Length: 177
Ligand code: SF4
Image (cartoon, rainbow, N blue to C red):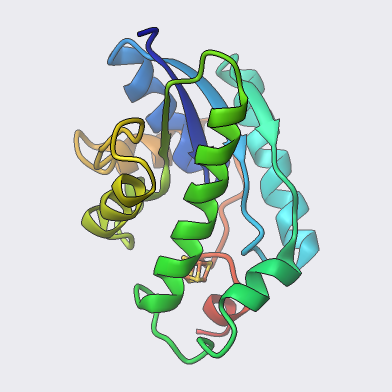
């Protein structure tokens, strides 16, 4: 099977070291920016622009998903008081990973999918990998991208290219913390 992977990208900075790691592991990578969790829409546009810039720097083909924040709000209804890392985040990961998997299934010759999410020191790779495997055990690539200095390398990349660094995870609830 051809080693090509659809990579869910949470933000351009995180994507930088992940793309390089996957390429070093022999994968051809296509990016997928799908993050309806981000609030407000101005912040979404800002992060999207960073991903577009990073894609140019790294010669990455980038697909852009729909920004449907209302759907995200419906799925996380009643979870506003959940702490970061709690059940709301699991629902949020699942929504984004499921859409990535669906998109990969619709594309010709896209046998694998995975996500940049585990590069963040604030994100639990065990939870992310469990959700990915529950969606499709055969096509989800299990990684903990913060290993091998993944986060440090992403920060170095952002400094080199003077990229915008967000101050909160994404949703309105994480913005209030
Ligand atoms: S804190 Fe981050 S991962 Fe958790 S629900 Fe909000 S945007 Fe999603």
